[in-house]
Image (cartoon, rainbow, N blue to C red; front, side, top):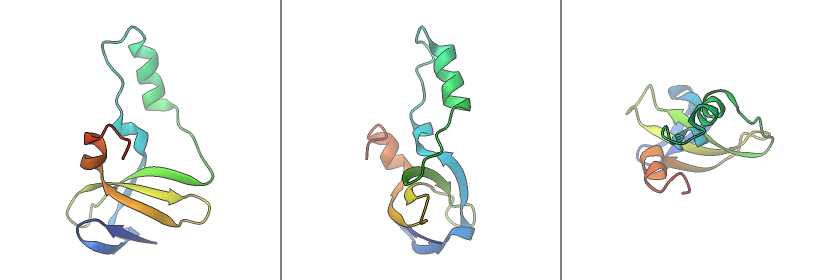
Length: 94
């Protein structure tokens, strides 16, 4: 699988480490009344979708950047690759 890095161009997926669902960029409010429940869900509850999914990937064998990769979990087709810092700045909605 090839990941088209936004800065470095096409890279083999073996250079990267998959780190889970990109919703992890949206951390719960630790001061909320239900903070314990929010953090439990944040840490332990995950969807396992078939189809398009936004994922966190870390470029371990390269520039050590974090990416948000939109990938079809059935076909492994990658439709979008963004720097995670840019996604985080927009509140995870980029």
